[in-house]
Length: 337
Ligand code: NAD
Ligand code: UFG
Image 1 (cartoon, rainbow, N blue to C red):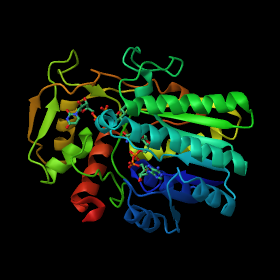
Image 2: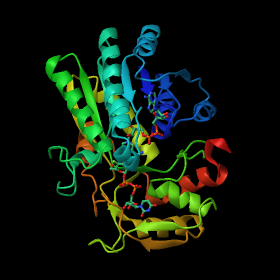
Image 3: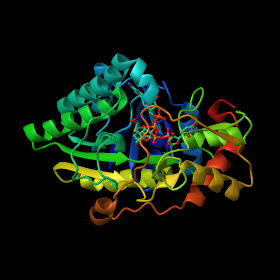
């Protein structure tokens, strides 16, 4: 297939580009580089020995999207492009809705005009809201989201469902990711957040490499295994392979929804201890106050993806730690180093 990857210069997009190229698909990447790097794409070329067709453009630029779709015979779109910082979305809601919701509308309008009607969308476990029973299962309706980032994901899911409802030629896969971490085993590509990391794994990695003094664990008094929050961490390469499998789902019409996770909850303290056990590098930490908006514990019921797509998150927590450290220790300053 020839696949257009929006946001392909970012963390999950670059790993997915590797898996697609290695599986023999052709790929065109569109990214405005607001949070991605062209170096990542050069590294993808190193890993795969193939050339990445890259267009530096914003998905909200209708003319640019029309031109990309006119110049390439695209079979399907995998849509990663978006802003993802939960805290920033609270202070800049208009920016988040403009980029994530309006960006998707413009992309879909360009797709419709070009007759390309298959899309795989990067959604999130956050759409289940705060009340859903754990483990989260796809039959549970979307819940009340608690920040504009999460709401933008829920809104885009609804837009894409309505599109299928209106025109059965569209096919849509909504992939609800849990917590992707890790890096490609080559150590050449990985997560490279700008500024202070919001997420746990890059924070641990930056403390370990000496860029930050210590980790603050947000809350030690939850009703969980050891008082710290539990999440379902999955290896980014497994997640990337999930997109490859989802291309199969969008070959059929309609909407399909899949949780992509391991089905296992792991606590923050367990994460810190696993990192140190696997890498032999200490991570100084202190337990601080809870972070507003955090849920105590959630993980996926990932049975549907296994049954229908033949997908399982096969890589272990040790793989996630070892691969994160290979990337971070080999690239202490990320792509900028
Ligand atoms: P990322 O920031 O590394 O990648 C997103 C890419 O999209 C970046 O390269 C950025 O430059 C690009 N981009 C953003 N807005 C754009 C626009 N208007 N036009 C063109 N390019 C644009 O993030 P990621 O972790 O790779 O996440 C990819 C997708 O997965 C996002 O939609 C994110 O919301 C979703 N997601 C991520 C997580 C996670 O924990 N990383 C969890 C659930 C869902
Ligand atoms: N945490 C810390 N210290 C830190 C950073 C995080 O203790 O410095 C804790 C958090 O409190 C949480 C856990 O580590 O308990 C994981 O936090 P992350 O920020 O890494 O991940 P979240 O589960 O909060 O959010 C992630 C993505 C969201 C997505 C959500 C649900 O960042 O985009 O998963 O899929 F919506």
